[in-house]
Image (cartoon, rainbow, N blue to C red):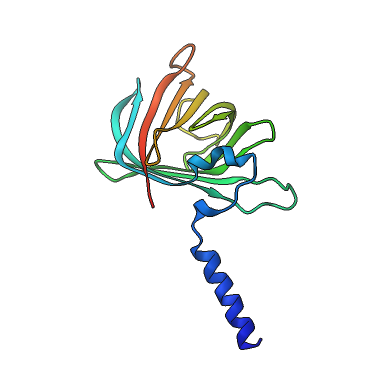
Length: 192
């Protein structure tokens, strides 16, 4: 390979590696989620609430960015990852990985899998600075120790260019009998 071609290839690779994720082009449907794209972090503002566990504080990092388009599906997804830890002990709580997209009529879909043995399929609506998803299906490994989750609602609200909040409400086999109980709430700061 000539030195000019090597220089062009290396320059292109360097350019690709330094282009910030937030400057990637989102398709017209996923542009509705442009406000959520980026790296968000909370060191200690996360709170866990549940009748059968002690209330505790946690940190979490949430990363949402463009995923490569799979030519077989020709659908643009956003990568979704979340990592949570105990604020006081720094013990690892859980990780979630998945994909987020918006269809042509404006419905959002989030599919996740976690190292707690759960997979979720959530759908909902996206509006300016707000995304509300509800559980459509859940899978779990057969030896999971958690109570069966029967329903879940996940809400993201961007308060301004710097802060975003996520609230997860759910219902298990034992709590509550109807509706949802708040399970977690976390306020993130957007990282540069």
